[in-house]
Image 1 (tube, one colour):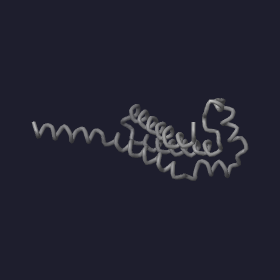
Image 2 (cartoon, rainbow, N blue to C red):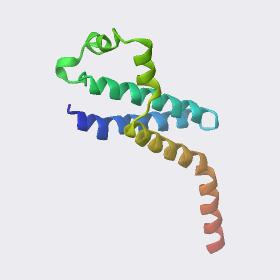
Image 3 (spheres, rainbow, N blue to C red):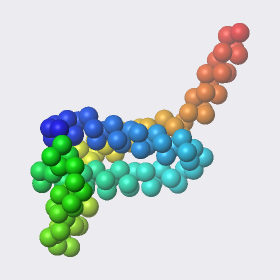
Image 4 (cartoon, rainbow, N blue to C red):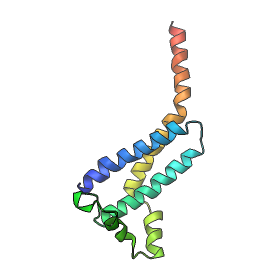
Length: 122
């Protein structure tokens, strides 16, 4: 797997699937949106750090030990840097997630407007 494929195809796909699954299961909760956005933020920062350090998953890197060894010698300052400082890809994933959450939250209103238009034309 190349880093470009991971950044532009796999990570956005994971963000989309995670957002859709959580909204389908917990469709009535508005507070869950904050959890989903926060988890996407933390996971994308961590995944991009793993990618930058060269441990992107391929056939040769299927062991969990190899990926976890990247985090073995980190100081508290480096952990804060990984988790708190966003990058452009994190913002991209958050925008994708936010748009999906907004779409799911507005879905009942959109359905009712469509049904009203159908009733008026019929």
